[in-house]
Length: 322
Image (cartoon, rainbow, N blue to C red; front, side, top):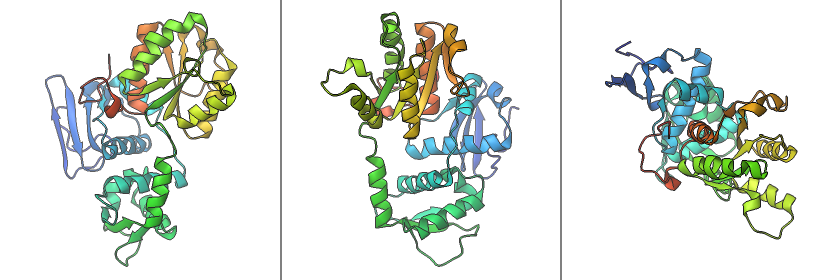
């Protein structure tokens, strides 16, 4: 496996390159997925084609958002695959519209979508599904077609975002008041103070985000209203269910109802007590502060992505580790 002739994720062969360094890491540039690095060992653990389609979309979204190139080893690849999201057709249309916005230099600028290359941009499974979403966005008045031609085509779509589309995008972008804020739901018992201060808080800050804990914010508002407000204001939520506090489950459920990403964690000796309704979610299972800090940082980078603007490090890569 010293040479790769096609992308190991999406099998695309054109405009593909892969270079292996002395550490047995392949540095891949794929015209469909984007750029990523992967160890030789991790390559052997890549799953079936269906799961790879979602991985391809995840890598492409990272590239479109301008986030650091992901580096996969066996551990980080497992974390990413276990937490890949699934989107509804309506959500995929919004993702596609945002993707078009990212490649648009200015309002009124045109964009070209090549169905056989750009379908990961919409988390679609193939070019036919992408064509369906292009047609849907056009019929909803969110994009304009710059030529009269069929939707079911292998040729690029020449389109631009309509004024109505820009208005929707602006409302969407403003839906989270503080894009760097992370709501922390956990037990406030004294026994977990160090877990918060030197584990969760440091992991979140290293990933470039601002951790928010309701009891650390002086206020005179009703506590329930304040919790709901700050979850709405947050980019994602971390729910550490150690000690099994009902409020943590409530806050995580509320965040999921808002389509906020929830990262679950629990101390190893309390894993057996995790509520059966949430056991299907991947948990960061930790033994001590150092273990939690490392694993939580890995999970944030893998699932949400590192926030470069807020990062306290100068790393250019989304490297996994402390």
